[in-house]
Length: 91
Image 1 (spheres, rainbow, N blue to C red):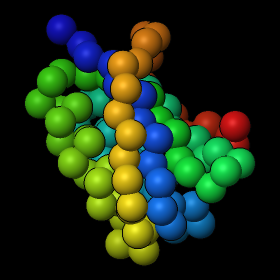
Image 2 (cartoon, rainbow, N blue to C red; image 1 turned 180 degrees about the horizontal axis):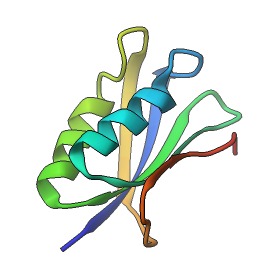
Image 3 (cartoon, rainbow, N blue to C red; image 1 turned 180 degrees about the vertical axis):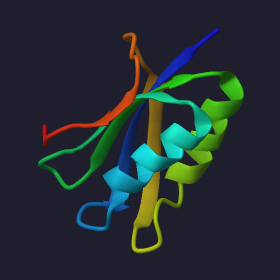
């Protein structure tokens, strides 16, 4: 069964290849959904997949890529059905 979670990631997370790195990690883990920058400087993501893959994705998001400085990850219930993982334009 697939779980969906909405993530809001705070800190230095834009301009540090966060979205691209998250796409690669999602593909490695078999996670579907999307990621995008928000105008307030955060990164927003919808992730969907097996429970173990989602847990691994959330753990990754708490650190992000090398140049990121993640301060907080807010997690809430998500929705939707996704065939792949995509990088979206700024919200």
